[in-house]
Length: 287
Image (cartoon, rainbow, N blue to C red):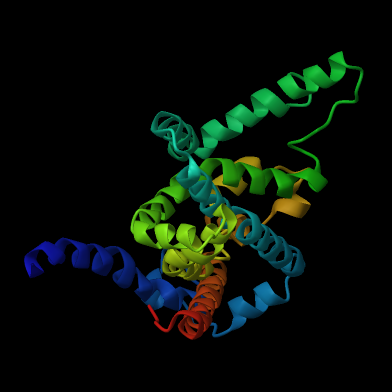
């Protein structure tokens, strides 16, 4: 059993724990030629540079807002889909819907953005062509700052809802059918059964998934944002991850980028501890 566990332990040791040595770059003026150990120590200068930066409030505000939107709308979506599929009696229809909903998970954001361009491009997009045909004004979906956040959240739901529902469907199969029979005998309606049997039956899974989601609440999704962001909507779509990419990879300011990444990780760690405490009060256990 320990030998079977060894590959997983090696993976986390090599790719998760060893790279943590480079966290010290957050406190240094990192220079690639000098290396990690020879780069001069600057203390909290990188953090101060980020906190006092011109775009700090904009970047943090965008990250928090998009994260909250995804938490409020994207997190419950797989639960709702799983409950709806669980209520379907036709196995063929259920399998068809489930397949159609989790297939987008296997599409990269490059492909998804290509689909968005095909449907929403200002000139040749299908939707804008239909609007023009019915004498409506064209809408710049991909460049309008006021629409980009809604577009980010809606495409995230479309891409992840089916895949996320799988774990809840698995949890639903673990509910004892006799509970539904007892509820029916007691005169409980379908709504009452949902509220008093189904949801309590998957409560542990929902809490666990929420805790895991909170641990990465500031991870908005670099691939998605990177594909959708452009100079026209950057004001409303620029988040920590895209800013770190520009500063760290394009400008070569590795120390500053590492400091921001460390700041984000600390926030996630604190949120996990807090969520664990709350989960313990509601569920009586802690992960």
